[in-house]
Length: 61
Length: 350
Image 1 (cartoon, rainbow over the protein chains, first blue to last red):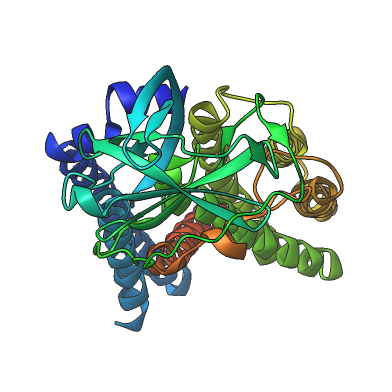
Image 2 (cartoon, each protein chain N blue to C red):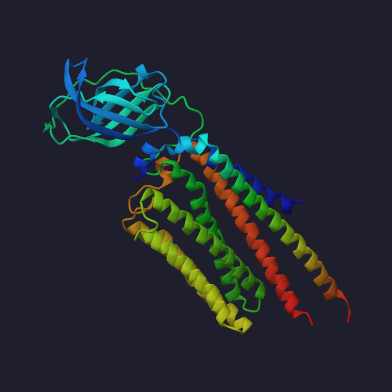
């Protein structure tokens, strides 16, 4: 099946010459950077919350 | 600073991995040695011989077409075939100039070219109409073996072809799942040895939660790979079924946690379940498939990529991929763990 596909429509030539490979890399990197941004942001918020909780814990009632 | 550095490093490694995975071209290979069912005049033999077409993938036969050589090889015997003409970069017409008596029916086909180097198509030629004489021999042809002049490229593998790029996703995702479930396993042992310590229970549940995601991604990338190489989204294979059962067993861990209200009882039950889940993971993914026939590489006598298929170009991307995915998985686990601890603290607030 793969052989027939490759003979009639050479995947490599199409994938690289049409620039689709760059689009795929671009999308993948965007998702990855978005995920990194989300994780850094979550960590920042968690740090703030931890600080707030610690200060509440240390406040005498 | 140190805390941020390894996370940024993990992301940078994965950016490198994605770029290399998608942009490094695939090396040349041989797709088919096709019988055209015609005869063609051979100048070397001075008679009409069967016409065959050799079909390459990513080859460069139109460059230096006169230098293309085609051989067939079986049982230590090598015979040069006559290249009648090079049609284009990936197609060449060949005359089957072989004697009537042959030592074997099945032959490997080889091409030798200054740009592509030597390429092999295993059992590419099967001749059923010849007289088989195991002792038939002829003098070995003289030739200069060329090595590939192409730059960095991934190796061509029959059937796998372009999908070899999936190696950088599928395998490291499973490795990361193993790492995370291993963290959960250690945390569960600690939890059982010290039931009052809730922190180990948090560690176990955070690692399993993130690990399941990596397992699901491993299943999806595996299924996609199976579709292109084996022709089906799912095949009845011990490795595939084992992977699915493992993910389901860990999903059961999450369901179990939801079913018990008492915090201490939940932690102990979940820890005990998690120990069994990890043992099941090891048995189903690492032990059982090795004792049964499997299509999956590395199982049942089917060689894995690390034996001889993983060349230096693949290693330069695969090893960083393993490190990158593991760093990302660890980061996700740490964030999930901190979320759980903050939630617990909020719940305890008066």
